[in-house]
Image 1 (cartoon, one colour):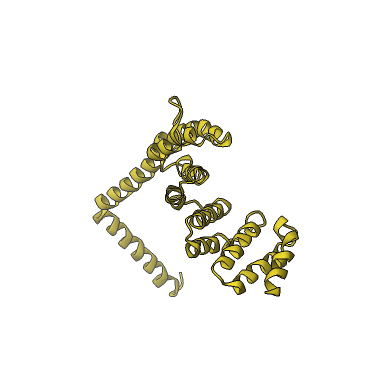
Image 2 (cartoon, helix red, strand yellow):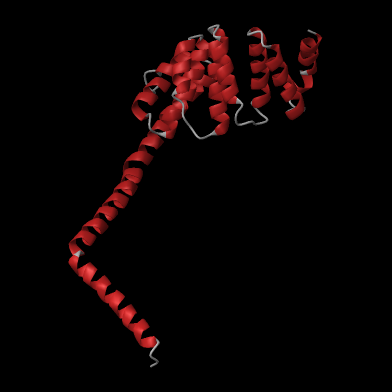
Length: 222
């Protein structure tokens, strides 16, 4: 064995020896930490399988009846239930942490908007927090609609602007049109024109894009 190999081998042995000594001295602590990790991991999967998932299934089942009433425009039963099935409000109270419970906020806000109860609609739509860009955009746009109905144009503009942060072909052209009209009401024709021109430039194939020239021409003539 060369003289160069000996120091290296001795160094490796020394490191191993120190590691063994550390384990021996801290064996109890290490075992406690490992046990704690196993308990946490087991607890998480137990919570998910035995509690969270069954609650989600129950909430989704209850949501079905409420959604049918919503589709049939029976907003009172959609919100409050029919005596046999829960409405959106009870689903929010009982299952608010589930996916269906969170979605119930969106439905409840939509129902109150349809009923003309705009402040209640705003409360539920603001509680609707999801990662889905499309639904999140819709919720913000509906809050803007509520503020327009309440004659709070500046607040409506703020939410319409939030609704178009993540642009998409389905909702953004329509919201941009609402934003432009809101700017016109607030006497800011320059920003209104910017909103209309954005529709023309970015969404020419949309329904709003095919009709936007008349809005642009009217403002430019002013």
